Length: 303
Image (cartoon, rainbow, N blue to C red; front, top):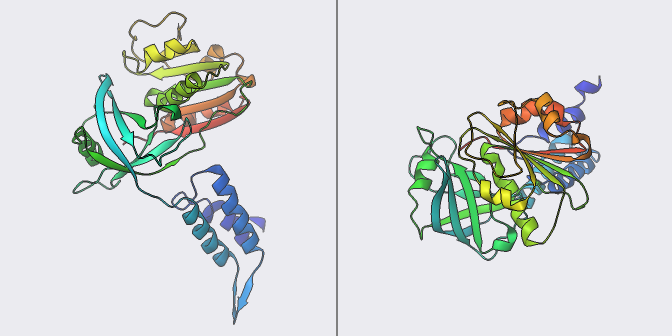
């Protein structure tokens, strides 16, 4: 049976293992091509034939080479609260660091007795590439108890030196500026979109963008900055938000679902949809968002 084929097992389980999969789409395609070629060219060694096993080993080696982590220095220059629950950190960074709007960096904060998730976390970059060597990240901070990572990050003082192991992600806006876009953010998932909006402003680009912003707190992070862009914005709020800027729309329903999303964005089918936020939000809305022209997601699992 086809389902019992070792090639199917290799392609659908072993090759897509999250811990060894390359982070960028083009890197994943390179690894898949290498593994496919190696698996189709078995080498006999005595009584054994090295086929799928050798292909997987070579593929993992290529993935390791493509995404080998380095060490980029970040010096903390400032920190501040954007809302009562969202904190922003400002760094001056190593001049080797380069990124595209929408990408994240993996930040390392060494500390004693780390919890099971270790000393590294991914953070979407909030600043635009044009802002370098200044780099900003923002994250939700306020829930108790804190993870060991958040506790250590809160203890870093101005002037403190941290390291990033790399910059990743294919969460990038389409190169064709004529394509209409839907940005759907859940809470702190707004951060990659802020980077993209800042980049568009810095590069003088104008695009047809609708932002759907799902918030749980009355204070809306980056409210004034989003308003200054002039993009159409629809807010779904669990609590009555602070006064909304002119031109913004408060959705009649506090909960977003497929029906309320389509009511807020009736031309969804003509737009490239980007969704950033909690995994549950993405999972709930994915069936409805499949009606968009394309769908790209970025999940925030918490720190």
